[in-house]
Length: 112
Image (cartoon, rainbow, N blue to C red; front, side, top):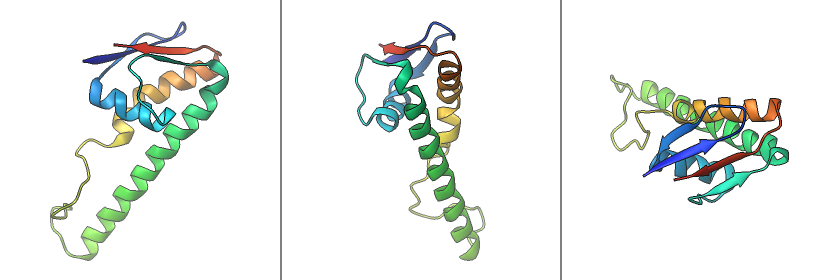
């Protein structure tokens, strides 16, 4: 299943279900299949997503530093739960879309 995010001022953003649900959970605390973010709520939603990205990057940096301190050669600790693809990479297209929606007040809608 794919999520298709739409606004009047941007092109459509299509994401795989797992990635779309993850970002919606961060932005809204829920991951509805269909929904809308009103233009007046857009700055708050953008701030939540950017905060989650910053936290993920800080956690990755801390894990990397811990691995260096422990002498792990490849930077990967056994049992580490870090995804190969960073949240920043997954969220980048959504952050760009949200910033455009904030700059030109527009609602964001999505569905499958």
